[in-house]
Amino acid sequence: MPRTIHIIGAGLAGLSAALRLSASGERVTVHEATAFAGGRCRSYHDAAVGMTIDNGNHLLLSGNHAALDYLRDIGVADRLIGPPAAEFPFVDLLSRARWTLRFNNGRLPFWIFDPTRRVPGTRARDYASLARLVWPPAGKTVGEVIACSGPLYSGLVEPLLLAALNVDPPAASAKLAAAVIRETLAAGGRACRPLVAREGLSATLIEPALAALRQRGAAVLLERQLRALRFGAGRLEALDFGTETIALAADDAVVLAVPPYAAAALVPGLAVPSEFRAIVNAHFRIAPPAGQPPLLGVLNGTVQWIFAFPGRLSITISAGDRLLDSPREDLAKTIWAEVAAVCELPAELPPWQIVRERRATCAATPAQDEKRPGAETAWRNLVIAGDWTNTGLPATIEGAIRSGNRAAELIAGR
Ligand SMILES: Cc1cc2nc3c(=O)[nH]c(=O)nc-3n(C[C@H](O)[C@H](O)[C@H](O)COP(=O)(O)OP(=O)(O)OC[C@H]3O[C@@H](n4cnc5c(N)ncnc54)[C@H](O)[C@@H]3O)c2cc1C
Image (cartoon, rainbow, N blue to C red):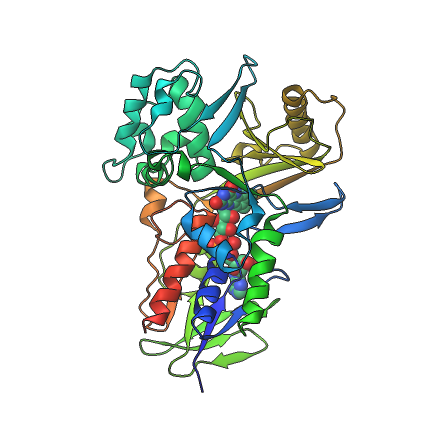
């Protein structure tokens, strides 16, 4: 009888572990608490806008190699759409100035010497300060390593780090900021092309993964919440789903790929990050105007990024905790006023939806980063995965997939 690997949680961490293990011939069963796979990265039909939308806009970069490998593995690498070069159009709501950051492909940043490609108002020598963020001292915040003011900060560092770390950049972990910069800006434009799942997150990252798992003989069981883990001497002995308990055979193993608060409730003594940051998304059913770029950065507004999809404009506001208690309609109006001004659209509010994910990611601060556990546990047949584990990256798709891959490697090696 071959061993069974049980994966708890069908977010990207759990799915990537399941894909790796089933590809190497392991017998895999995924158990997901809710009625859908995808966790924090999924699509759903929204009645208010009358269309299928994502729970939040997700941006990937061409340097996210684990995410791209994952998509290649499930046969849909072509579903991430982006410009052929690393270009980021911006608009400043205060001055109404518009410009496009254009990184060159190689590692040598020629673009910083070209005023038509760099941040307006900056000089090439300003960019030298970023070198301090590439290998920063341990335990520091970004604000302790670089000056968080001036045109380079507001035109490049702040939007990049807000999007990647989902925390106010001055308070962000410099170590995590450095990981992002090393894998993107410092790697050259080739690693910085913005990529978006134009057909939706589920159609791109989730449904094809489920199809590949089925094809590899893995079972994915929905509405199956793990209630408790039963521990023996040095190993897990059983999984308790409330109505059913599964006894684990000697070789069976478990990947626990649930959010940190769920993991802490299941595993005694597990230290986990306990602070989170929100992401607010607003979706408007309206055709993007001709020439609207797929992704537009906005400075000096409530809106941070405008994503253009067929028949819809969707807005992202990271570290959006200050907006959690605003009345929804007021928020929709504020956001739409900015979008209408930027995109030259009528002031009348189109059909809209606001999605506020309170615990979108764990807080990427030095103190919270310290609390992220590794994948291995004190129990030889239990490993942990998730964007919040100690991946060395902020809580992102890339981090979640790398953690799932790492969990699969650990299990395969046992
Ligand atoms: C609004 C928003 C915008 C984002 N934008 C970006 C972006 O632009 N780029 C980017 O890279 N990342 C982005 N992220 C982050 C990204 O979505 C996450 O890093 C990633 O999806 C986390 O995957 P995960 O598998 O670690 O966790 P999750 O997706 O949280 O998966 C955990 C799964 O475990 C299940 N579960 C929980 N408890 C149990 C239990 N007891 N039994 C069984 N199952 C259980 C949950 O239901 C869930 O399906 C964003 C996140 C949000 C919310």
